[in-house]
Length: 163
Image 1 (cartoon, rainbow, N blue to C red):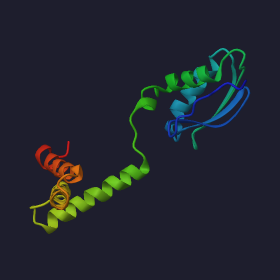
Image 2: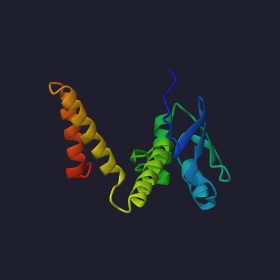
Image 3: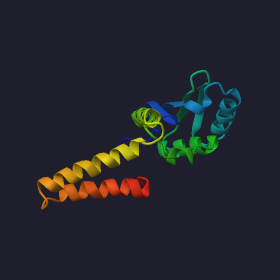
């Protein structure tokens, strides 16, 4: 059974792995000769690792080891520990698309604010839309909860600031 070795995008990525051999890409090593030497020195002290080769120009690390002595999961833990990256793998991250969408929303918000000379912002426009559409739906069909829900959402956005 093949033993699992985790990969952490943008931190420590497994690029290629065979039994007893793994090539990693470690972003934090790019251009950092001192940390690269430190990692190489520390890994060579670990029982079961018999060859370490690091290219700090591209952040590539090749480790040859004996899987009977050190498991791939433990090897990854050692690397994360030596580089102090344990906390970083658990940090909340946002995807690229999320960042692009946030920037677009911020630009729309700023445009609305500037065009209305500070009277409206994006949250207020959305709240007014929900309130207006909710009132329309409520008039059309007072039994249906959709209009009431939209009124409630609009009210909450205005009164609580959308939080």
